[in-house]
Image 1 (spheres, rainbow, N blue to C red):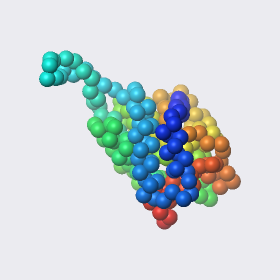
Image 2: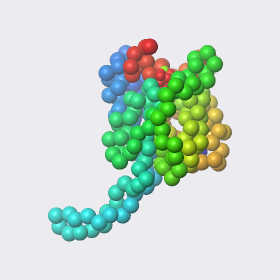
Image 3: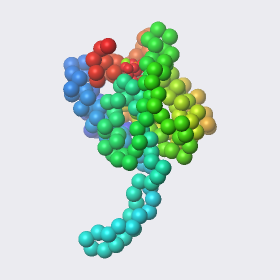
Image 4: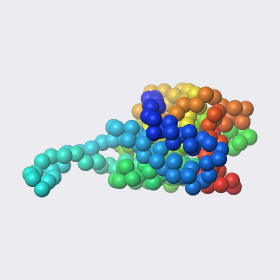
Length: 211
Ligand SMILES: O=P(O)(O)OC[C@H]1O[C@H](OP(=O)(O)OP(=O)(O)O)[C@H](O)[C@@H]1O
Ligand SMILES: O=c1cc[nH]c(=O)[nH]1
Ligand SMILES: [Mg+2]
């Protein structure tokens, strides 16, 4: 598993505002969108391209465009939905699949309540979106879904990760697949409720309100 931590002053600034308890949903949503755009640049560094011939106003030349099969972007609902537009803006050919997962706050087990993905993901570059990687249970379950459908090239884009969760994902992945995690920051630890510290609280609630 490869880990890439964004190291950029704009990411630091936007994260500082995002984490602030005084930041309300509208600003929070805007910041998540902007942060994803910055992370997507790194997350798509190895996206497949093909050579094409184009005509400029001056001459014909060869250039590169996004290749097929099209990459697939999979937001993990709810909170991952806040990252979808920012990602697809940068990756316009992508198809979008959906995974609905909720962590049981007692057992910390990830429960899957929705799943709309192609049956066959072999040969597809897959991008999972979820702002929070806490215990890693949700991301492991999501990666497992993709691997079971034949995916071998998975990049997870997260905003915050806990060291404990990163270790869980790394142990699960081993050498089964090519998995990368691109994250805005790795925080200190999990607290007794398995929330990321210092974190930003419940990302889904901050995006969409408490349900
Ligand atoms: O690493 P884990 O310990 O599994 O926790 C992380 C998960 O928790 C949050 O979702 P949540 O279950 O709160 O669902 P929501 O997006 O609907 O709020 C978050 O968006 C991750 O999916
Ligand atoms: O800190 C955390 C942990 C799990 N889920 C969240 O939304 N935030
Ligand atoms: Mg939540």
